Length: 113
Image 1 (cartoon, helix red, strand yellow):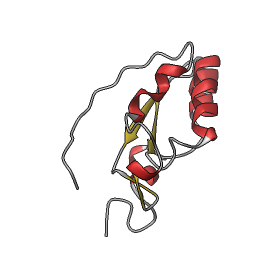
Image 2: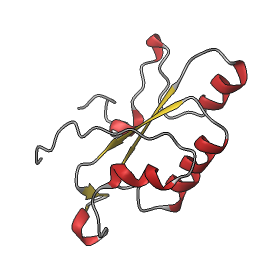
Image 3: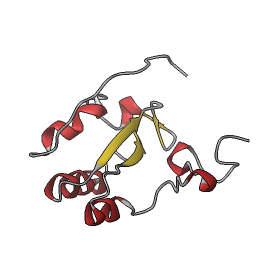
Image 4: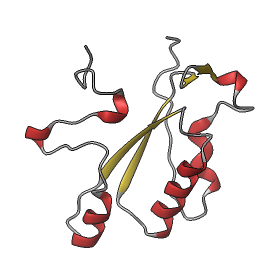
């Protein structure tokens, strides 16, 4: 049934007993409390062509939020193959365009699904 028990894809990971609550707005709390924690935010190729992603990247840079953004590309953006919706599929480089955002990226796997 999958890692989220049928309640979403990898963007909805959670494990309550480990204190991992998935896609909730806890990154602001880490900044406010100055507790040294970071938040992992997962997003996929379905989100990269939407304005909300750039807004989130800009806010992360502007507020210097303690976040690690993890991008997953399955080459199908909500069911549409990537070559039909994007001129460049190098989505992981989109953070390079946000001034003040420290971006590092590593291509982990290029295995076709």
